[in-house]
Length: 404
Ligand code: FEO
Image 1 (spheres, helix red, strand yellow):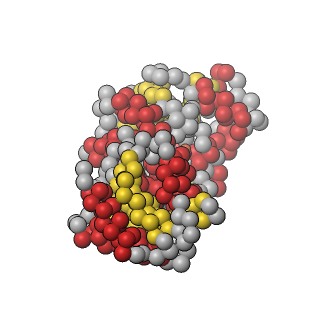
Image 2: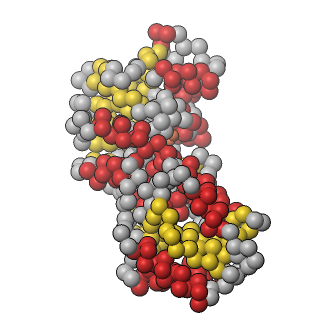
Image 3: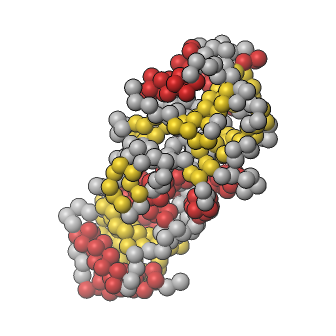
């Protein structure tokens, strides 16, 4: 079995696993670079294991754990988050180390019992922690920080003041296995753990998984701002160390629904390529004005990428056809995904197509009504194909998009 253990600090070992078999993370997010389920062990007078991994990797993870333990027994299993990608190996752990005390929030223990009604832990085998509680392992002392809804209600972080490490559960995570991630501006695979950080995959992960809960992320960021952190160990993605300001700034922007990159996102659906042609014409006009433009065909792209970019750029144009007195299904789904994640603070333009009763712009505006976004007044209407009139409308839309 491949050795995945790695020294994080002299007392902290990485024992996580990489998943290259997964097709859709959480049943909906494409993960072309796979996924990592991180897990750690702190060695001190007492030994604490921090989280387990997905059940498909129990054997590999248990091998990593036993190698790291080298015959020792763990005293504590800290459960930061009850979602199955991190708790899928708890049953195997408890069977192997029945004397271990479980440490989690009270909510997590309720969930644990729901997932594992067979567990018969007595109260003296469980420690339910709350905000500010501490657990001494010796020179390492963990302080627990409640992080509800980042990404489930039972979530907590822990902070080790000795090594200045924040264990951040899902926060600061990313899509991608730790041994197969591209770097930004470098699409080649094989960048070695742990130096890499792919902003696009981290943003797509954040917006997809936690995007709805910006205020809750802001609340926990405020608590973290009071800590002296030299390293962030999340449950997914690379370990972050050194200058952490980049990651903290990213999270601050994303969780406050700010604009990360200047530019325009165009998302379209198309039936006979006429709406697509108009979308690309708009792209051409915007680029001629020096704008960065990203464009997605919603029927063919990874939906979560198009969603993440809607939260990345400050200006978004939606182009679709009128269809069955409604709008084309992929656009409807896209708008649903945006709304589920509290889409806001954007300037939105519309292109509609309709051969006999164009209504797509009105319907899209109706779907987005109440979302704290601004709609452009200039709407482009294609009465089947681009006409001179629709091109004039597009020029007006370009001017409006670029005016601030
Ligand atoms: Fe990585 Fe919310 O679980």
